[in-house]
Picture (cartoon, rainbow, N blue to C red):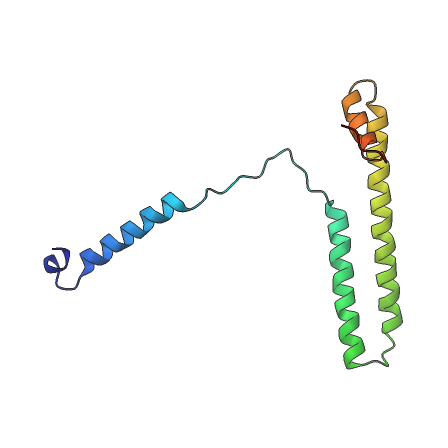
Length: 126
């Protein structure tokens, strides 16, 4: 009997802990390591712009709710608009660079070019 060996029951508590740990190791899924060659779909610069826009919008909402007559509101709105324009420019730049990369390697790697061009096809092929 496990409880009679110890007066305070520490050996039984240790047995329960080890059994629980063993069950957790057996039934917990392994952590999948991210592949090193996969890139994030959103660039770091664009994520920074998104974060800046989100913070400015929160600041504007707080300012409007607390002090609607503030003189800073138009400047914050202007900064939000400039950040949104920066995001648009970043997206257009990334699309342009992808297109230039596909065009430049059409001779050396035609599969890359045709997989790029297939995204813009209106018809689905088999």
